[in-house]
Length: 113
Length: 117
Image 1: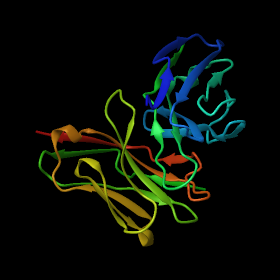
Image 2: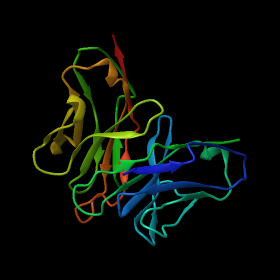
Image 3: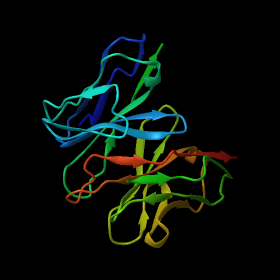
Image 4: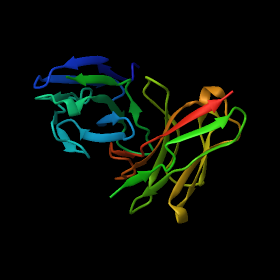
């Protein structure tokens, strides 16, 4: 198993540009989430999904869109990037039931100029 | 609403000394609690978790944590710190639903651990 994979590892954008951060998992996990990590803020939940076709907002959803068309993939879209979205983004996944651990991807570092 | 407080932003200990990292949570029901560690430039690795049962849980790398409901705490401990333990540590609480964390974790702001040789 590759686990949770994220692409790209690093990206530089100009203000107003759009892009999609990719996240995929090969563990057949139902739950997937996106977090952003900023210095001194810990990780904050952006959006999450409890299964294909079902998504919901987390703590800081503004400026981000998600969709979940398959169990494996959970892309995060920035429609119009802003400098405030400069951050490290982590994707995570877990099984639906039981005492399951969330597995985190390696992260995507995003710089918005 | 769920929240997690890690009162110590930065802790410095000498190698071989004992360690305790504090974590307090706010949650209306029985919490699912986690400690993660992050080395520089890396993702998050789970150290240990508490879902139910014994309130003293053992994790990887010699770490343990104790759940104290009366104090709303889940402090992380290690009896003897190694230089390789230098990293940032995050406490998290999971929103429970149907026995799972529903894909949502609320993190504290982290504690940076420095280990002196």
